[in-house]
Each structure stands twice: as C-alpha cells, then as structure tokens.
Length: 451
Image (cartoon, rainbow, N blue to C red; front, top):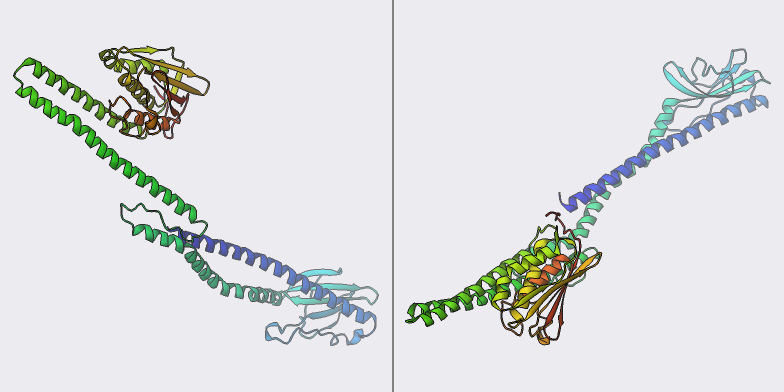
C-alpha cells in the first residue's frame, strides 16, 4: 500500500470516527435538551391551567372548551397539547378537543409520568389543586416528540453529510499536493544513470524532505568515494601484481637459459623473492577485503595468545632478517572480534620487521585498564617520514624503506575503525612506535561472543 493511500484512508477513517462520535453526542445531547424543553412546556401549561382555574378566569363548568394550546401551524406537528381536568373524586370535569376518552395518567400526585392509551404513548404532567378539588393533566404524544427530535437531529446532520464528500476530496487533494515533491524526487532518481553520483539540486524543498535530500546526497558522496577508491584499488593492485609477475617471467627465462649453476641459483632466488612478495600482496588484499566485511563475532581470548600466534607466523621472516622480537608481559583477556585484532597486530609487527635493519629489535607490549587496551609495537628502523605520516594509512603508500605492498597500515586503520579503536604513529629515536588502542569488551551489531 502506498503512503498516499495509507494517509488518505487513515485520515478518512479518523474523520468518519470523529463524525460518528459527534453524531452520537449530538443525538444524545439534542434529545435530552428537546425532552427538557418539552417537559418544561408540559409543566408550565398544567400550572397555567391550574392558575386560571384558581383565579376564576376559567369556570370549571366551562373548562371542557376553555383550554387549547396549539403548536405551530405545520402539518408535521399538527398534534396539540392535550389537557384533561379531573375532580379528585375521579370524575372528568373537562378536556381539550382531541383528547383521548381515557384518563391521561393514573398518577395521583403532582409530577411527570408516562402512559399508554389505545396503543399510543403519552408524556403527562399532573398538577393537583386541593383548593378547587381538581387534578389538571397536560399530555404530549411521545411519537410527536420523537419525530421532532429526529427532525432536529436530521437538520443538524444533513449539512455534515453533504460536507463529508467535499472534505474527503480536500483530503485527497491536500495529500496529493503534499506528496508531490516526493514524487518529483522519485522521478529525478529514476532518471539517473547508474554512474551518476552528483548531488541533488539544492533548490527550495519542504522542511520534511530536506533531511531525505541531504541523506541521499551524503549517500551519493560516500558511494562516489567508495567507487573511486575501488577503482584506484583495482588499478594499484593490478600494477603491484604486474611487477612481481614480470620479474617471475624474466627470472624463469634466465634460469632456463643459464649455463652455470651460479646464474641459475641467483635466478631461482629472485623467483622465490617475487613469489614471496606476490604471496604477501595477495594475502593482504584478501585480508583487507575480510576486515571490511561483516559478521565478525566478538570472541574472548588472551592478548598474549594472539601476540604469540603472530610471532610464530612471522618467526621465519624475523630469523631471515636476523631480527629479535621481544614480547613484554601481556594483560588479561579481551572480548573483541579476534580476526580484526589479529590482522591489525600482524600487519604492524610485519611492517616493523620489514623496516628494521639486520640485528634490530622489535618490541611488543601492552597496557590495559578497566575499559581499554593500548598495544605498542616499536622497531629500530628509519621510521615513517614526516612527509607521508598523514597519508601512511592510505592504500599502496610505502615508507622510507620502500619494501612491502603499502597495504599493511591501511588494513590496520580499517581494523581499528571496525573495533572502535585508534591508530597512532609516533616517531622514536631511532625507529617508529605504533600504538593500537582498543576497547576491552565490544560486541558488534549482529555479532556474538564465543571462543
């Protein structure tokens, strides 16, 4: 169901509900008021007749034709008030024309009463005059009363019934006009090409639509940036893979054509280096894709456990470069996505090993408090040049050593963002200090804890 139809149906339903409530209230209120007015008329008429009799303005002997109070000359309400005068002994003294032959009310006291005579219901008010020894009864047909109430209510409701369709049309027109800017926005989006990430025009728009337009513009900007990044990433990755592959092809040709073992051995050594470089690049490309992915559950593990695992993985690289890795005492357990922290620490330590000169030392330490852990990795290399320090976490940016793929710190930066942590690069003399600050306990949206 569309928003337009839902709004129209909701407003119409609300209007009809209010209308029906008003009808019920008007019917109840009008009936009560009309009944009160008619009852007051009965009482006043009966008291007037009793007063005229008491003042001798009407002779009791002539009372049969003396009282007649007609209603307005209208065929609908041609029925008149009916009056009967009875003696206290029960004899009929007089009555108005059109009055029933039977007694209007059997009540003996002054007051209101209902009675049924020949199948017709009457509302009667009785006045007892002990001084004259008479009982005056003035009655009104209940059927005439009900017709009067219905006509009054109908006169109030007919205009409302006529107005209701017009109100429905106004609701339809108002909602259609109010949603017209949204329709224009949808039409504008439908006409866009798949590669059009330009912002929506900043012209006048309803206040409720501006946040939607701003959010869409923000989405377009992020999508354009992401697309540009992916395009650059693909180009850089292709270039980085092309270089070692070209070296592999060249060295393979040299090895095949070599006539002595020394030349052949050197070529094979270069092939091994190119394969290692390509393997690391592919691994980091896959790792970067993984750390940017979803569904990474939080897991409880010891920080020392993950650091020891990283050191075992890089032991061959450290020994091959004659480097020493020193692990300081590690604190207690963490509860974070293990893969993200492992990827971050591995790439920081691997960069430190690649940047350190032979015989150097790479130190790994950590300090934790109740909420966060600060993991520090230092090396004895040349450090990150000041000129590229701000862009060091960009993809394919290499440091002074010129080795590696330029993806390590980019992976670390993405992992820290996913963990809600920070990455700080601080120079040392000599060397470089990298600090990773992560929360002790996080559970990403949709994640779960586990070992």
